[in-house]
Image (tube, rainbow, N blue to C red):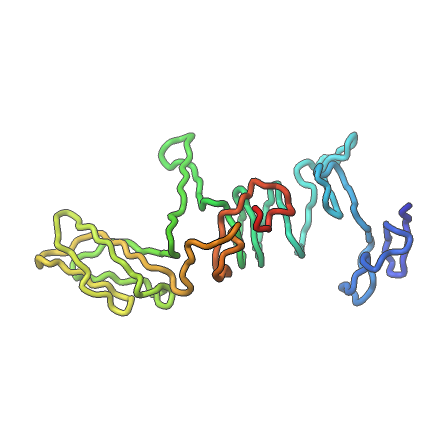
Length: 270
């Protein structure tokens, strides 16, 4: 049976009579002491009415059966930094005030909301990249759009060109897009015009001309593919993890996030 012991480190230890090496820390804030702080517990430990799938070393809930601590909805309240090593599964709401930096995948089957910046070195979103907002014109309705999909990492600018017929491309397009992939779409405004692209200068300026010599007054869209490794559209594999190219700058969608068995979330069987 577990004992309540005082160790030389000044800590209360709850667990086996002789702590295993795995229960000790190699290094704490105060050096190489086996324990630091006031309490060491070997799990699994249970506080409150936890999840029915109690798979963690610490399982926490907000209900203690006949007694309730009157803090329903917030099982853990932490002020300060939190360091997590390993995979994290979130099935409830997480409210974050401040910056969240993630070096690894984020699997989200619903919306991720933060009042500040969310930065991820790599992340996975749901199969469709949606945004959903209150309808701007009809009360009680909502509006949902989905991102454009295509076989390239395309970006665009649009606007109106007139008089001199010159479209100035954004400065940040330099070394950001493949200049050879630039395409221009023109729609005359007000009257028919024999418009054509005379030349694209250094990937910075597009010169539009009117074959009939008349005025130029048109809407434009300019599209280009991102510079760098080209997208491999079709490949052999069981999941997005089998993509044969560099995935370091890709947001990968397509996993079956309806599967809740944690052990399968990151395998090619999903």
